[in-house]
Length: 183
Image (cartoon, rainbow, N blue to C red; front, side, top):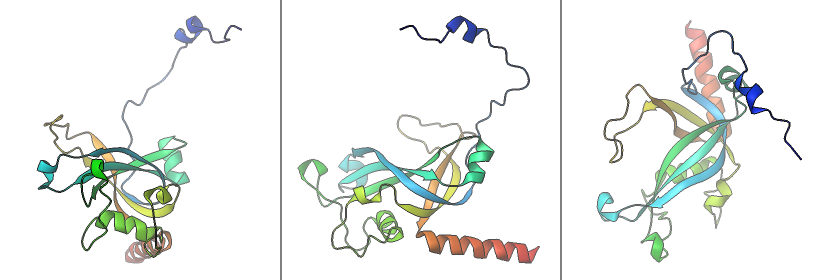
């Protein structure tokens, strides 16, 4: 059955007016968000981490704020959080996440935000679809081996803090009230 799509007509569509060619980032701020995915995980070179066994991963958070969605003209807004997991040994040899003292504090804060830190057993899979309060900051890319001179004008929205939903929301509302009272 032929498709009703007509490439020739599509190519002849006329667009009138200005076209905004600027990417608009998620505004710096605090938001309710939900983990949608743990992505791009890779075992890192031990030599670059002082002999420690480390996995690098990205956590993809969906911002649950209708005002930001409307402002950016998007149905789904995703921001990322870079995460390093220090392991008890090489991942390829069965190393597990090291939950010892002062280890993996960013991961522990996420466990705390989801109230999973009290459970006798927990998995990273339990993070999926959990909701927390996050702080987003727009930052320039850091130099890497693949990109030693990133464009300082290109900003990326990154998650910088994770808190339990109610505690984060209450703190945010208190800050808003204090700002309003100061004006």
